[in-house]
Image 1 (cartoon, rainbow, N blue to C red):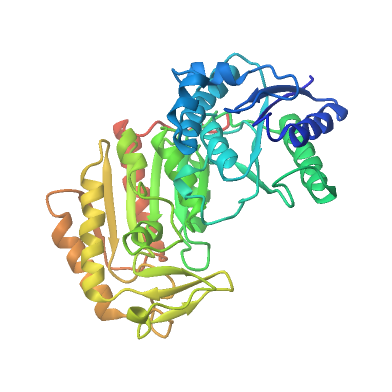
Image 2 (image 1 turned 120 degrees about the horizontal axis):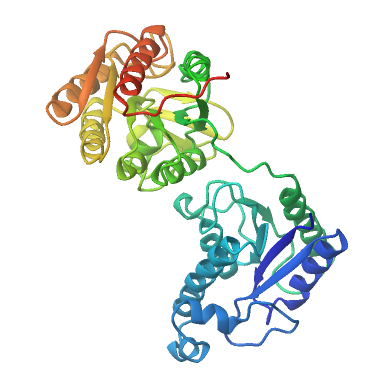
Amino acid sequence: MKKTILVIGTFDTKADELGYLIERIELQGGAVLAMDVSILGNAAIPVAISKHDVAQAAGTTIAELIALGEEGEAFEKMSAGAALLTRRLYDEGRFDGMIALGGTMGTDLGLDCSQALPVGVPKYLVSTVAGSPLIAAERMAADVQFILWAGGLYGLNPLCKSSLSQAAGAVLGAARAVEKPSFDRPVIGMTSLGSSCLKYMKRLHPELVKRGYDVAVFHTTGMGGMAFERLASDGVFACVMDFSLQEFVNVQYGSLVSAGADRLSGAGSSGTPQIVAPGAADILDLAGWQEIPDRFKDRPFHQHNRLIKNVAFNGDERKQLAQAIADSLASAKGPTHFILPKGGIEEWDRPGESAYDPEGLEAFTSEFERVMQGRVDMTVLDCHINDAAFCDAVLDKFDAWVAEGLVPAGKTAS
């Protein structure tokens, strides 16, 4: 079937670039549905969705937006209208994939539009700020794709055409090739910090698959946790196994390795059953290029690779983090169980390893036992989080919830 791509942009100032992108999509056999999100000027080429349609969807008019006299405020309203229209058009079956392009304004609007679409719908942003720390994790859809727009600020040029032609092929190819998630079997959402720091998924994954579940494991280095939280809050998961809380503690200490301020709240807000453990919650992430802050320079340190490194929290900081984790979990609407492995919470927290701190670990686990009491159901284990005993305890609780009907039964092959 012929695939249609929703192309979003300011067709007054970027008509040449958008026209070239449309041309490349159509040359490959795709169709285009164009949405103009301009405010001051008029679209220089024909569009299916006018700027007036977008403003109307936001409950305003172009004249009213111009009268605001503030570009940022006006464009926020256009973003709201564009996001509403994007979802409405998709629900009507009008397009199969979305692509938006722009600088900071166009990217800001494109982020809203991509968030309006379900997982599995191809969504691309061609942006002059792709990969920039300007883009907060919480603004991104779980499966959005970014393409850096080289030389794309003003007018067509060979570099710009190279980016746009690749973008045209990417979004149309994705619309043709995508296998949208069907969720025929219940999905378990699990977090981990890679497979060297935290290893439990190597045991849990096959056991859960054997029980008839699909398992999606998210890497908690900012973007992974963002996607995990978004899906958990949407109720996509039958159960959550959130065993890597590093992004949560990163937020408390201002690390740029962040999944946003809502980390550790998605499952709780949707009522999804969740089993939680404090994996890697004893260390702070820093970008590999960052200088270690003075207050952390005397701490245990681990250089993971050139992109990321870690420093350990001290005992007092861990007590504060335990309280913050308990507060977040206590507000959950659904079944919540906390598993506390007192023998260590990440692989570098073992004798002889770079983050080994038995006094800090004792302060952490003792504080958890104190602050969880009477607020969150808890199992305390005398083992390390990467030991088999931890996985056994997780499966025992999970199987009990299935037996009680709190978690839907898996679907095994007949």
